[in-house]
Length: 351
Image (cartoon, rainbow, N blue to C red; front, side, top):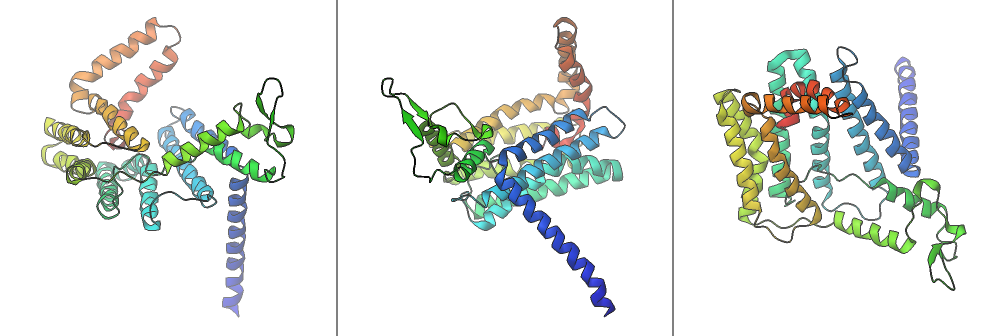
């Protein structure tokens, strides 16, 4: 009797929590644009916190990680209502979800462990996260044939498109009336007043143009990955394992040695050069290769090159812009203060 009486409140709490989750999911499905504004507000708060108090930088990163996880959660809720899900099997989607979660929390995990357990804890969590990410990516590459690994692993949904789809369902596109009106003299196509969408999902193009754009974007996002040959698979494997090889070289030669920096640069350039021969890439894969090419500029901000060559020149340029270009000081001076802290975070510039 006593055990049953003690279990009753816990069952009631679980039931209330389940109802709360169902209400939140229903709200997200009905108001995708409003949830996007909430996510943007949380992310904007993370930009305002640094420099306010002692632990503001860690709190800012916690809020930023929470905003990314919130986007991931809301997109998962909305994707359950889509008529066609993302390409790939359910186990593959679970791997992509775990990979996305790791990328969302990796910076805060590094900063939190460094504050609690010091440098040893910091490097331990870095190695564990990079090892987990490499295993997940190798499984996606070799087992599920997922092709080129893109960042982010799961593409965020277009909330405006979700809002317009929901508005069309609610406001009754099935009412039997024409959605458009064609002028007799001008032959201009405009939306009829009965089918005008809500203010949040309103747009200035014709309905046909909107539908064509949405269908084209949906097709581009749901394109299957380009099959990789042996050379391209080796190139992508090099890219996936590069962080682990870099960490291993840091352990062998130390953080002040040029060898880890050179090894990582050679691996990145080799991977890109081997992938450059690949043709017929889809839109996401082309964007990913452009992103990797641009990220080669990060080597200017990575030690030891940054410590010996870039730091003085970059700070001099920012100070020059702040002193002689009106208005830029509001941007460049906080950047000068933030750059040393940013450069010391592994997942900011090496992750």
